Image (cartoon, rainbow, N blue to C red):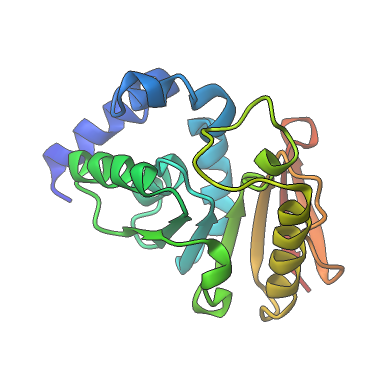
Amino acid sequence: MNEHAQVSNAIFLRSDIAFNALYPLNVRMLSNRHWTPIHIAQLAVDFLAKDGGKILDIGSGVGKFCLAGAHFAPTAQFFGVEQRDYLIKHAESAQKTLDLSNVSFIHKNFTQLNLREFDHFYFFNSFYENVDSLDRIDEGIDYSRALFDYYVAYLRNGLEQMPQGTKLATFHSFHGEVPAGYEMVASHQSGDLIFWIKK
């Protein structure tokens, strides 16, 4: 990323309103509820990417966390997995505008990934749509309490298999996905953002 791009990106990343200008209006309208605020992304990135590594955002939506992370931590690699193809396209469009090379988006259900291919994880409770029928992104995928329970258990089991030192940042989570071996090391935003390390 050249110096001009760095300056341009800093303008987009100065506020959520500025960043949301990267997206069409219908996507911007979902921001307050579904996309990670810039200040939360910076806190999480400072924790997760301190030593570089591969960081996976589980349910990355339009890529806001990954794109902010790629800007704030250029020595780390950010990956976003998202099952909605049109959100991936919005993420890739924003990535092109920001000219960030240390970020990739994966169009899959996260259960199709091998979590051992990544080092650390960010989780903004992307499963909650399955139990909250009033505030879903869309009606284009299946929802159910059974899917919520399955996803939580799958993620918990996957995190359990990770090596010592694995970091996890959860935002607005019930923490059912956090295995017993992970220790809470910091809490921010009145407990909404929590940092964990596998001991």
